[in-house]
Amino acid sequence: MTILVTGATGSVGRLVVDELLAAGEDVRALTVDPERAKLPEAAEVVVGSLARPDELPLGGIDAVYLAPMARTVRRFCELAADAGIERVVALSGSSIGDGHEASSGNAYAVVEAEVGKAGFAWTFLRPGSFMDNTLDWAGMVRAGEVAMAYGDSTQTPIALGDIAAVAARVLTTDGHVGATYVLSGPEALSLRGQVATLAAVLGNEIRFRELTPGEQRGRWLGYGVPERVADWLLTGFESTTRNPEVPTGVAEELSGRPGTTYAEWVAARREHFA
Image (cartoon, rainbow, N blue to C red; front, side):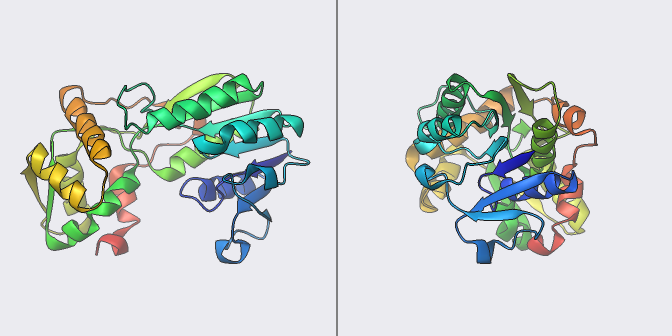
């Protein structure tokens, strides 16, 4: 079976390539710049982008790992169906249906709707927050103080590698057609708890300072975050303060291995925070 990995140099797609190759699958890895991509020699590296679906090399493909791109997903589905592709595993998100006009879930919903009605044997993966989101804290971590609003906001962040492991397993095993999987990390952690973990693993004193929602919003706007997106993010943090997330256990069940803890994730990225 030959599997096309779109977004093969993206945060999740690159790891999906590795997982599939380790499982002995034939991989066609899509990238806009093969020379810079540094993909494994075992992968068939092809030039292309989901942003230009009419140029995609779809011949001879049995299944697709589909990175989310709402703007062109309808055309991709038309071309993939014409090429005889039967299986599509699409990366989506748990923010679907949260009702906010600026939500990332709105774009994910478009992807799911188009893939679902195109007649593929589909599976949707809906991870929640990424552990990688806290890479943005690196400067604050080095300064010894992380300042955020809603310190008690409790989420279940997941490592990108765990998402990739699930994607590879779903692409290569039976029993997942028509399934929507909500993926989480193995533990629920508040923002304060994440900072405490960073301090413990790095061996540094790192304080947590609570910002007001207004202060947080002002910071994000100063970084160039659009107002509507800042409001959506604040809504999410407030919601998970009132209703803490709980691990789903789905990633562990599907991948057949323990989920990556936040402490393990931090330990593997000491240099980034040092």
